[in-house]
Length: 205
Image: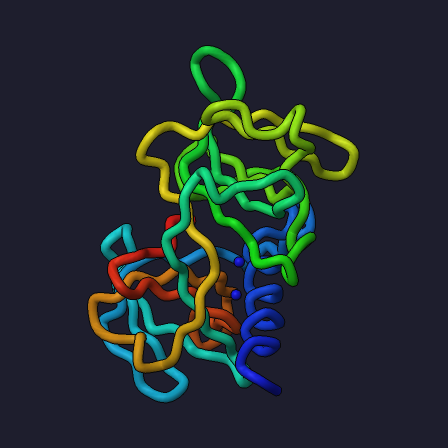
């Protein structure tokens, strides 16, 4: 998911992650995610080569927001934290995490729920609160709660774990990895939010 600098960051990222993580049934049909590397940035335009190999020109809407991610660790996850976990069903039952985002406290509740996600085929996204110490973190398995439900998710070794960090337009350099929730417009993809990789850390969602 992301005035003075800190409130602006939190508000912008709340919008980003709420938009990116809204329940599939509530999504506008024309909303989609762009994952790729920056080719060029200028003013209100961002050119990105997507992970599928297509180069797209994205219009940055008025008031668009920008953030990045920073490395975190499984051991940073504590009961009561709000997290976003992309996962896949495991052969032995339950889910295995593909990535974990630890939200800043001010973003608790952004996009809460569990629903289909497009990181990989059959993947899901769960934005939820880490359960109490008894049910919570057991080895590399975390129990999360959302809307009165619970879900156990295993976190395999090597799973990217990140948190939200600040960014500036100076970080929008060629080759930087981006995650962009976008919508279709007459002129092509339009976005209000950009999440960019920096310092070797890329948005894993």
